Amino acid sequence: MKNSKKVADSYTHHVQILSQSSLNGYRRLFGGRLMEWIDIVAAVVARRHCNMNVTTAAVDSLVFKKPAFANDTVAIDGYITYAGKTSMEICVETFVENLDGSKDPINTAYVVMVAIDQDGKPAEVPGLILESESDRQNYEAALRRKEYRKIRANENF
Image (tube, rainbow, N blue to C red; front, side, top):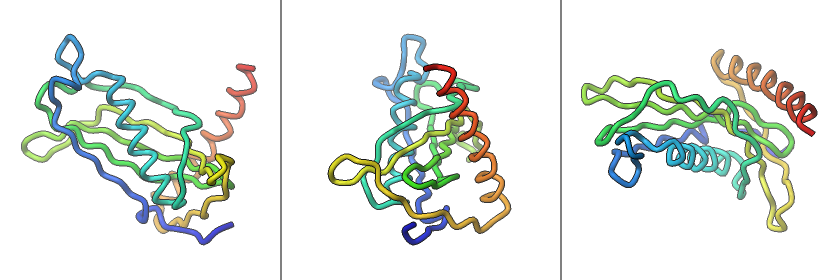
């Protein structure tokens, strides 16, 4: 396995002020646009971790908890929770950031990314250094989600 990296080494933060092009007919954040931003943030985290191109393999738990409206500030945080042989799980948390600085959660998604080499084949990724109790808990939860994904994949085919 390549040299291991810390969770903080690939942490990514993205901010958007919602404009007309990101809204649906009800002047709320279009879910597809948020899914695009989540995928981009997850890809940046994964690329920073493995220093390679990546591709999306799975997205879990895309649940919209609260809407975001025109002119809201949307903050998106991404961090790695698991690194396997060629895959990585990225947690992407989305918030509406209020003018007073407080944040209201609107979505949490788990995205599985696979590193790809120059030939488009899966490539080995660095291990993950777990520095905190939170890192360890996130890693253990990621292992459970990984097993659940395997079960679901076998049921669907």
